[in-house]
Length: 325
Image (cartoon, rainbow, N blue to C red; front, side):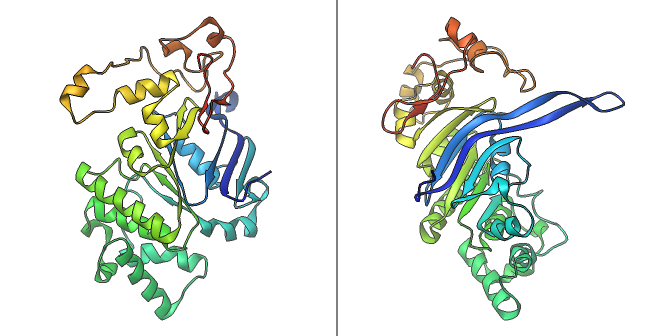
């Protein structure tokens, strides 16, 4: 049963992409991009979703937005089951869920002005016209710390950080409840990353937004996330609040990720133990039996190769899927 303080609830989500081969394009397998994950996002919080490239983070976000027809599972948004919606009903709900893209250069139409890009969602959902439309576009530009006169400029006239601000303004134009942030700072300079993260935090507080913040940089995630979910090869291996994850990581994969995060103090950085993972990430077409992480895990047991570890709460909403814990 859905809880009132949960805006999003994911239950046993699977998203497989078929692998086709031959002249007749026969199905010969599946890419198991998301392989049976469950989690929730509370209203007004930021859930960080971290992991290596190709682990299924972006696919998870797009499944929530119903950009993919999921293989199986349930996705509840604001008490409504998205997987059972279609047509006009789903379209009307989409204004409450928006996406900030990773690449600020590829995600803006070069033939449209900044004002047209920001205002397009309002026109699609019939939220504003005429003078009210122009006023809201100007207000959205101010909200992301750009000047209203910039509405007449085209994307090529902006820097990367300014383009991402336009992308954020576009996501805010329908006054959504949930924003999926798909690695929104990974393509930006470090100095600009800090500005964008600070902006996102301020907007969340002022507008009561809820974020799913997808990233592979744990140092970035720590600054913005209330809770963090760690994903590996289509499965979530650990979820807990941000401070607990960084102070007491329990899953061997989380420990390896955190050991690679740079520490500003060189004395401390030299003294800590680095965990180096061996081998490559297995193929999602043919994942290993048992625990997906067992071929690279320095703590693996025989049971890890035979049984898939079930996630369990080890206290204080610290959820981990590992036979060792």
